[in-house]
Length: 192
Image (cartoon, rainbow, N blue to C red; front, side, top):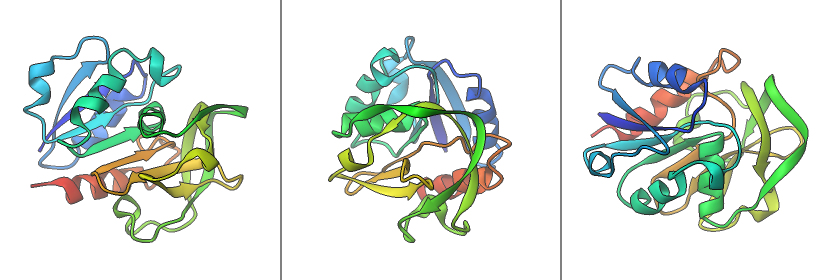
């Protein structure tokens, strides 16, 4: 499975790639969000939007990637990647009162049928590194919330009709003990 990872200039990107490639059939290609080989996009089997600093509008061609590939490839957005997916489909981004940087907190699944959380306990602990998030009341169709934290902040989303999902937490973090399982669930579901 050829996975294209859009690197949003995050220090965790290569941890993420390492974890994805721990699945035997996955080969990752990494492209910076400001240096995308548009022809190479069409050779990928799946797309991962990495974490990164700032907000989606400041992340190079991240939003353009979503626009071009939303109905062509499975997409997984992590942290900034999830925020970009949320914004693209109409959710609002908010600057959080509490900053989460290197903090493990419980995540509660809201949808037992969500593939990425198959086999995970609820709650499960997950590493968080963010100061922005999606406003929960702004996440509406075609998106649905698949996970929340204790305060009701959005930790997971899924598109109702397209093969698109997002995680606010970092599955590749050492603070996310079930992170590898979550990523492997996504890969297994999308493997052809």
